[in-house]
Image (tube, rainbow, N blue to C red):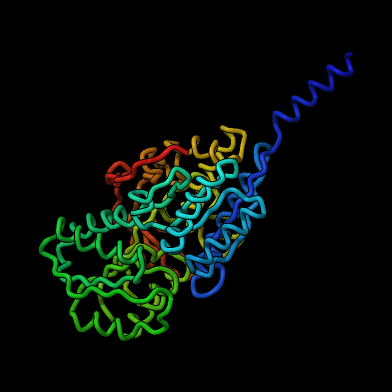
Length: 401
């Protein structure tokens, strides 16, 4: 009897600390012109998975290439489900994310015992947490309207800005950026003249010089763009080649490859990005330094850490990787970010609310110790919007999971 009692105690001790296996499908473009951006995000997620794996959970993240195509995203999602994976991370291309969100909602309705969870790392079409919100979808990045609000509030403090040119990618996200810029400039700086409004094909342009020529001919003093990946790097390269002396107000100038392109423009602290944080803000630990030592670049996708940290909190709380249990734990959850602020997944629409920084890029100066992509230039804070002030209303009617 004593041996049986001892065995029961030993079993209880080992099972109480059993690792929860957490299998994740990263469904994003891992080939083609967007591959560098998404491989970089995948590296961030895997580093976080390694850091968080331990006594409570073990993370396995597998890449699925959606080829920057909405239909392919659905095909890859089904492959992941067939492989037994129930947690998806995706985000590069709001068109693909929108298709994936719809697929997940339909799948969960038809297969409630095999429900899946969609953790959105960077698809920021506002509709995904408004009319197209879903109980299985959580967004860990500010959406396009929230980011534009931060940019326009900063632009409102810059009286020298008089003539603005808009250039964006012609799909749901780029169209959302365009619409937000037109509406918010009218509200916060009605004196600014919009002298150009351009939409171009996504990831199809190799030479932006004709577009830059139009910007130059418009006599714009500033450009607002939501372009990302090669579409931003090549746009900035063409601007440098043409010696275009405008200010740039961007969403993604901090993304991999873009700092090098910004450096080529020579526009010191005249290229701005709205982001969750940067390497020259005091951080809570050595993650950025460790990542630089391993990959040579900065930890420039801070939402990858937030996503994995909040997922880990939910796994530990529920002792489970079951999507419905995780969704219940994530809804309304909060945690401290790597920059010391508080991020909250608003229960009403599953949209993250966190501090946003408007940053500029230029030569290292006092208070700046880390550069980007070995350019000798780095990011510094030009302005900041607190999380509570990013909380735009939502039209979401959240259903039960």
